[in-house]
Length: 292
Picture 1: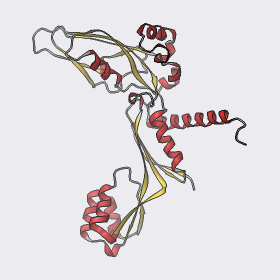
Picture 2: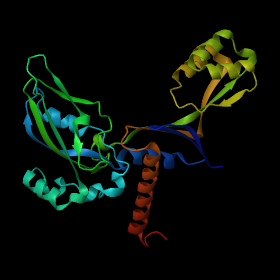
Picture 3: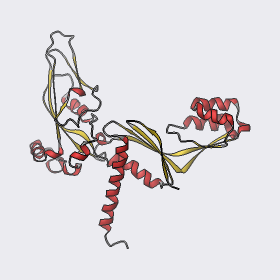
Picture 4: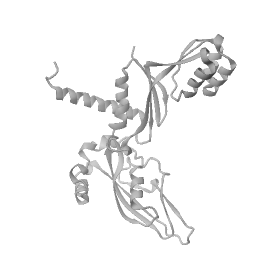
């Protein structure tokens, strides 16, 4: 029987229990999330003035790694394949500028202008991601408190940058989430052989599980745990011994998606499935009449 059960859901994290689906299929969704789901990130940075102690290259790197809100951007802007100026321009920045002008539907312009007019050596101004102004109100740095650099008295910063959609297979800055796929633990136990020491070890792992086992109401538990089960394995092998055994059901999978904030985790899964569907259809077209 095939079934998908919601284990956990929040604004940035979702956990699913997936039963009856092939491991290869669910793992393909995991891989698609990491490599195929498009998100916005800053791609080109033009620094007109930088009086801070941070080198231009380091500032550009920090800007490129900012998490950019992308929920609406994935619907509004052209896909990455149509918006990579480096495919035709290489390192020719004049060509890149012309490319950006020619394809405005690919890019979001942002500016960062900050100065510290204060007098005195101790008067410092912290430049944060929230100081960045975007021409698209739907595309902006998610974590505004991220510190970029510090300006001393009389120093200023003037930066122009362009963000575009990209995929994780291009660069890590385009990866939208941390994704974990694992087998579901199945706990088998013998209430007659469970010692107090064993229960205390399990209690350190999870008090609810220890309570269930202590009542002796079951001898087998399918444990939909989204965390690490190393401590539980330690209890079974080193403390409980014959009283407790931990196995893993390969037909029951747990998929955990934790978003960096660029996309809602539900949207991430939906987009990953869409990308896989496109690839399957493309493969069918390429095969044509080769496969009967």
